[in-house]
Length: 411
View (tube, rainbow, N blue to C red):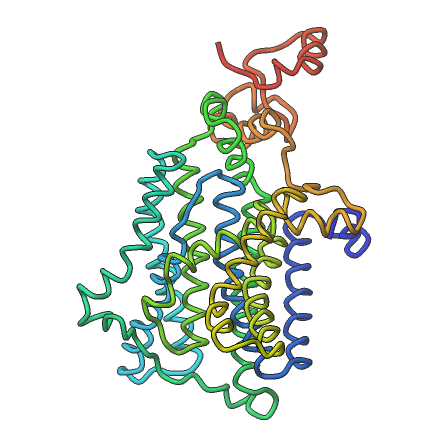
């Protein structure tokens, strides 16, 4: 949905109220849509919503701050195990129902945040393949960690959680799968709305500035290391919420569900949808849930020989994902979200903030504490970067037309 369409739908709202209103409308539509789906489709919808949390956090991390993570499955596992351990402890204490879920969800997000904070502190000193290697090592270490502390994590068997029935007030209205879809949709709505507000705010501008040119961002007073750590922590919180919801749906968590292949699949979903696009994260999440099922159903309908069917099982979806990823990167580098924007007649990337490294850096500098506390910033117009010194009108006109003077630097 581009800016013009949003303005027509909500002409009296701007900024945060507009985001919250659109999020509420989309959440209500999604909850109402569950009545049109059968139990299996609702289960798929709940799974896609859980993935949506993790993919949205990943697309914020990679698309906005420029930090590559190949270990988001480990952060989802942290959320899943945190949810399971807390839920089982509350069950033994006699707590059940919605309070048990809420407390377990908060605990899962807190554990994932702590792990993300530790990774973010390391990520602030690493770049490129070194950061990717660190996150890759983390997701590979998940099975070993569960085996070493098998008394807590139950090794390869994983943890099982108590049954979560439909609340008494809704028993006659919805089925179990629909209740799970409702919970997943609501959690995803809260998580993604928070990420959207971050993306549109001052922190989002600073992330873009650090991604485009970290040196220029530092010169303009943007705390690059703090921005990187914050981005990783927020992304980890979203992944932890997704892991908790996935554990709520399946009522179990184990290392076999959070492998390297699954972690790479989350990256594929973010790239296919469009890095930096929240709507693209939703598209990618649906694709990685629906496409393997569709391929399996299609191969079963073709009545292939048994040997060929065994060879294609599990490999066909990887082949299709690889081919689809290559095609999208060649034909539409901005992902399927960009294709949808072009089909609507919109401009891909519209409303994404700064359209160039210089604009992102100068805008982030205007919103940074260093720029806000300077005397020139106090006397400059709101929303524009403050110059280092008073500039005569003729010099200001020349600076506005000279790209090399877009980023003010104190001398």
